Figure 1: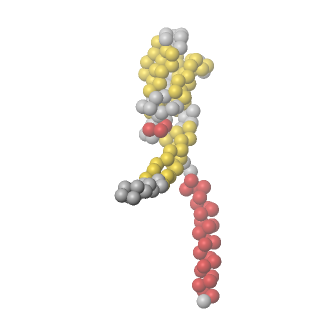
Figure 2: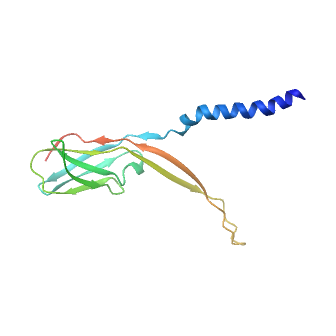
Figure 3: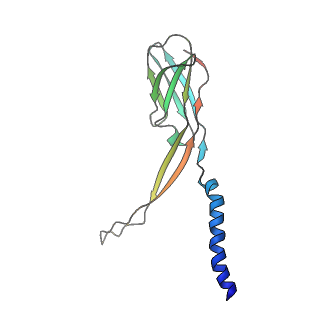
Length: 142
């Protein structure tokens, strides 16, 4: 009997310790590289794309357009990663940059609802975090 009591106490303690040690490592967000490109431009502005393997890393990113290290305009990317800055641009070499961003995306799943009783089952939601890394374009003459 002593052996059973010992197991009842020891196993939860061991599990709690393992969770404490592995928790931070298991909770780290996945990181996805981000690529920024200037695809064209002229005296009235510039346009380009932000690309990443993770769709959430392409949309809603703030792009900073720089000339000689000085910001001359910003834009927010559309769903596919396209961006456009409307500004009076002088001839020169430009670069586009995006800062790192952490995204918390939720996914939901639900069991089939019993329509005959018109009951709705609660959806289970999982929160997944990932990190969109910063990126910058190659210097581009416009």
